[in-house]
Length: 320
Image (cartoon, rainbow, N blue to C red; front, side, top):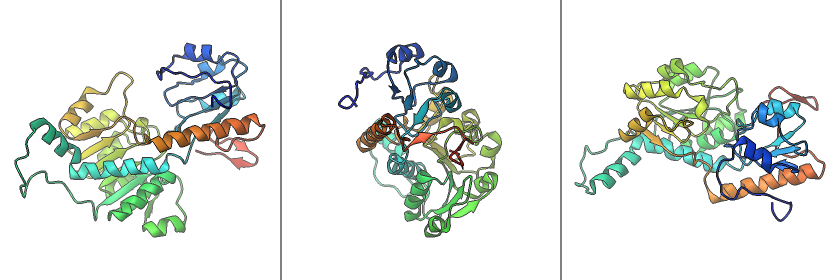
């Protein structure tokens, strides 16, 4: 970007306050934001009039008030697609880690600094093959997860806003559920791959978590707000759920101590939002940001423009 444009960079790699963002945007045309930049309606309303484009460095855009940006005449873009393979890899790694107790075994060896030797009953987990995987959100990432999981012998079930076409379903032998509640009752592992919207906010609430099978597992590499974290902690503490692997979690005031205690007790695997953390993904994200900026500055529609849900553009209804 510095080669192509006059660019100011947050070289310290720390989160800036709203006022710091506003100060840095004086006489600028573009804000390249990340998921940690809270661009709410108030801040968008105070942006310098020179700013015309918010080019998000990332796929998720729930840090941006898209409706407020639209009303202010701002264009918003993101970087979809480039994170698909890496996020799917991470989801499958967590799906494997839970039933096979990989993190627990590693932790025990590192703490005890001793291996007593093989035992027929030591660190028994559960087999993946033959288990039912329920995918919530069968978009690009959900489909990539299903393809990987199928190779490990998991049966594929999914709940999504709409049913996927036969060319996607049939190779995976995937079963579509039009009821999330019914699917939760039928699967052994639930993996979340849906964007955060008004409809999906806390979609796994206390009532739905209670519908999950006894001993089942939950994996979330999407958004923490999809789950009622307090209710999840309760289900795990009671022993009803077999475990959870969370790459995202509520942390505005620090990680919930109860969640940390569950991780210490090997009931939860926690990773710090690293599903897309590969060098290749970060480079491709940056290149996509540049494409969006160049296209916009050349007077054309950026290829990855984000619009408010339900907005009609060119006779087409826009949905996430």
